[in-house]
Length: 262
Image (cartoon, rainbow, N blue to C red; front, top):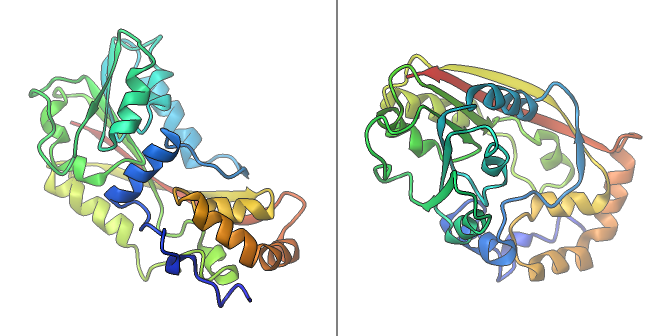
């Protein structure tokens, strides 16, 4: 069976990525939102720039983490913040964060499509690390005037080359910039039209053929992963080895960084 003839989306256990069901499944399977593939990302890249800017923003502040996942990123700021509150829609992630038991770190289950469950001007600053853009509709209300907001979101061209190599495992690049357009719209609707958005593009090198599968099937059940390994691993390996460099298989790594003062 060729790689083009097997489509993991036809598997009975396939769940649409980034749906509420998918997040709940990931929470049950691992309790964490943590990428399972191994790769190297060239520098500078959006992730490192964002992390550095957050590190400069949060000391001594009461901070909101939007879309906190299992809380690993938020917990690292505990030694320097006054208090940090993480919100996420997935209850298993929230439990993982609260299990850390830190007095100045709190995690709350919340759907950002609803009004954020906080008082007006409750936070000194906030950040959104690959979290839901729907939070931008209400986040201005909960940040003190003059407070900073920093966001990090996947770019429209991320992994654009992988669809050409593995068409059933990755989505083609969209026409235009729908992610950026939606981001701008959400910011404007939330009264944050003065936000600056920077595009940061670099390269990500997947280390081994199995990392192609881990990336494309992130958050899927083991049954889906096992089916792909059984039916497509040899072809994936062939394509990987044909196109990889000594650093690994290269693909575009793109992030949008949002910066705004409320």
